[in-house]
Length: 421
Image (cartoon, rainbow, N blue to C red; front, side, top):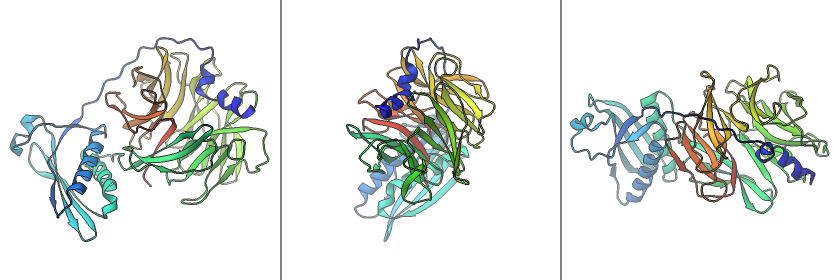
């Protein structure tokens, strides 16, 4: 019962107790997008129609989901008419069968000058069709915006597979290629993925929560904290890698429901507390430079988002509107923090733009949403929504205009979006 009570104590559910909803009036406007027309793919090879279709469908979906483009639905008869049809750029590509797989040649043409501005060539095996559709989509985003896309990336999450048992899974950014990462047959929660791909999480496989993960790239999953498996004086949750992968922040709690943010350093194998409060301090998230941490605390009454330096100094409150703001996630560019706010009786996603000192609502209260995590390019968010079965993965751009379900899997939680390493 002590384990269960602590889990509840640091959850959003416990932070919600005795809070009264306050109306928050926020809005966001979508930015203009590039209009791209994708020509019908050309192909060379016998019997490769299915491969061409798989590549083309994946590519088109990745481009559509990039939060950069509007897809032109115009029937293009003459390229000279592109500009009149509102098209900015034209994508043409050819798929060629080779002895070892396929070759793709892609070109981007400026609708105004009709000049080929960018082109790429890709060679890959038959089993890498989807990966290279992701790669080409990211390159197209790079060619036309100067910043790479996030199609070739991964989403890691926890999922209940039977009562009392949750394991970690990973999928491509479009919901394909789902693999299971842990098989502990226990509660395994709160994944974090380092930039080099190392995994970190909490598991109850030993009966009490311990932080497990990988000390080296591709290495075995081992207990990382506490060092002594007999240490049962505290409970541990929410580990999150620092950007340089040399430290991780986590939550230490006790049986009375109090919790603090702590820091573990791989250099000296020591930890120290960053907060010292009689209340709940939880859900740490790093800024991209690894110099600051945002977290949730109820020290001011209801749960709010706070910031502090990575040594625990200069603590200040970020959110004030509303009585429930939690689950912060710092954007890859460091300019925004996504979080969950209870708004009109439901949980919705907001982003706080640090330069403006203002928050903007992303989701609209159709159902409760939680656990936002940023795409590596900072253009989109993955989160848990309850629009269908409990705990389903959704994506949204930062305007909230493009929102869709990533996977039909239910019983999911704590998604983490990371680069493909």
